[in-house]
Amino acid sequence: MTEITSDDIEAARILFAGPCDFIWGATSAENLPPEKLNEIAFVGRSNAGKSSLVNALTGRKALARVSQTPGATRQINFFNLADRLMLVDLPGYGFAKRSKSESDQWQEMIFAYLRRRAKLRRVALLIDGRRGVMDSDRQVMELLDRAAVSYGLVLTKADEVPAKAQPRALEAARGETTKHTAALAQVRLTSALKGDGIAELRADLAALA
Ligand SMILES: Nc1nc2c(ncn2[C@@H]2O[C@H](COP(=O)(O)OP(=O)(O)OP(=O)(O)O)[C@@H](O)[C@H]2O)c(=O)[nH]1
Ligand SMILES: [Mg+2]
Image 1 (spheres, rainbow, N blue to C red):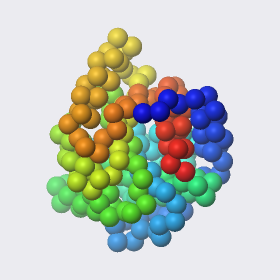
Image 2: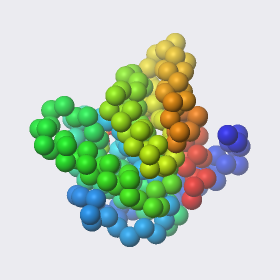
Image 3: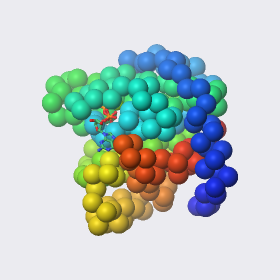
Image 4: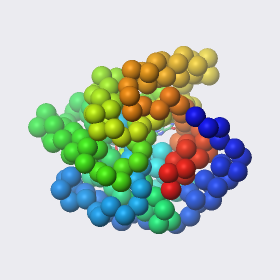
């Protein structure tokens, strides 16, 4: 893994400060927009903080819809970043309060998207930093291994993880990556609320533009 330099951080900051427009919301994996730009998808359990992270990365307050109630994002939302990258905010999986058939349907949509998207260059797999990797996340990791889609674990809500517990949370997440062929070794700890780790994650992702 190459070190991130201050030049990388600055170039990424400029890229993510550029225009970012919502261009498409897909309610099934059959009506996705044409593949033009390299794509980065934000994937994770319901309420993990995917939409908040898209907002934090792009410095917008309400580009992507955020809610305290799991199930805020109901479609696959595509955001064109400066005509250089497509940011894709997905609905969450593992939302217990939804009916079984509805959650199966959503999971199928998410999995179909992840399997078949040729321009999908990276998945940011978001894990609530207070909870760590769960079985539903491991299922997604296995799917991404099979599809050979490169992914990095991103621990979210760092502001809610006591400083003393952070090294252990990172170590546990790194332990998960070693069992998976398509997982990057690098794990990021972020806070969409306070900004921790956001500049570094931007630099990771800008490298794919
Ligand atoms: N403290 C804290 N709360 C956060 C952070 N990021 C997100 N949240 C909160 O977590 C809740 C869910 O955030 P969302 O961004 O809607 O999560 P999501 O993963 O997009 O959820 P779904 O679309 O339902 O799958 C909201 O109440 C956010 O304010 C963070 O960095 N710190
Ligand atoms: Mg969301």
